[in-house]
Length: 277
Image (tube, rainbow, N blue to C red):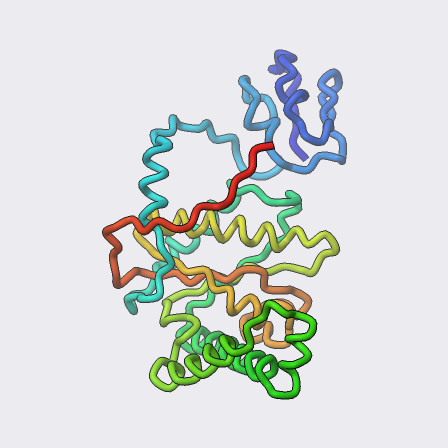
């Protein structure tokens, strides 16, 4: 629990007003157990008299990144499916993970765990398990017995298109032994226990996005691997292969490595539909 040093506190009440849990009683310096450990009180205190329960207080340096800088930076980020075989140094991977302490979360419980798969054999196994699961799913959906039922209940599903995709996938598999992981030198798996609130899925996507941005700023490239999440996320029977607790669920997967390609033009995508109410 954060601690308030009342001997230096000026009673400006900034921490009290900014506390989302209304957990601070400034008269006594007490912080109730309703505290969600968001750190707002520590970050806002002008006198640095509120101390975290973990780590040290680090003053923020001036930020030179402008909105235009960020816009130009993100315009150049694309999903990478062509990687050099060069390993990503462990120091860089740990730096990416350490930075996640700055990232927000949906519930602030921060129950997510992270597994970094670096072994070539393990990445190939992850690739194979995902491919096998997808082929099994495609075969089930497009089978003559099941597809009429699917059309009945999910009318928008294009079975013919799925059949063509399955056939194309099987053909590519003959010449490409890494259709899912694209020979990435590392795969970051974001996982955690199954919760009733479902907040961890949101947390995983938030953290994976921050990690992707940070990685690109370090000269790396990434690709969100939704196939692995769909194929293995709800089924923990393969978790032991990657030292993930069987009770955990994979919520996000991120390929990461040094890119073989460099994109020089911005390619605009369809903008989201916006409604101002």
